[in-house]
Image (tube, rainbow, N blue to C red; front, side):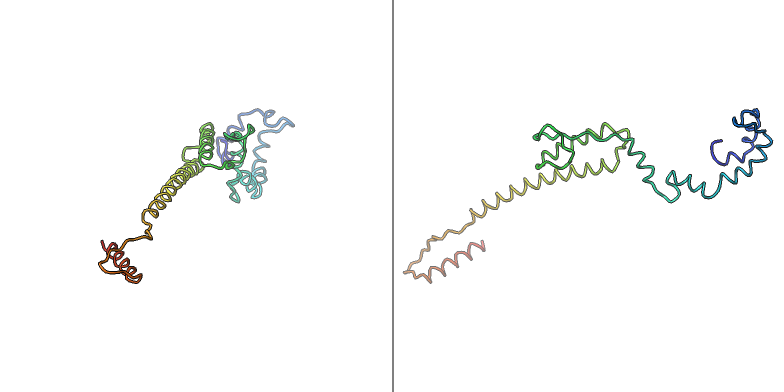
Length: 197
């Protein structure tokens, strides 16, 4: 009997008639019969279009506004603790990305995950915050692996470039006397032969 249709039902009328006259309203004596006679007028005044719309608007249903309810829920969630980053001064940092290295960011993510575990009863495991944290953590791991791979590749290319560097003092053996032109031709021919192998 707690919704607006309960006023139309027979149970409500029986419930209203079960009270003594003096208990219906404390301000003045109001008889049951008077109440039942005034009930249609009361309904007309109480259930106007604007009154109903105002009631729905308070709940964010009429002119759909889910943030009305979400803001009230967010106020119930306690604020996160101040992050303390190792390697910095004793006062905490409220800026999540103030550190400069991947290890410090990883440490901050672990702190945030612990804070989320503390309020897990208000957040489910598939919340968008948890998904974004997992993606961010995976991105950091990939960034660290890419950095290591880039350093290894750079070192490999430097070593390979040094190994493949041509020496300027190649010895060319011919049976006859050499000119510079003959030596250059012979060097080109030797280079082509090595490339074919």
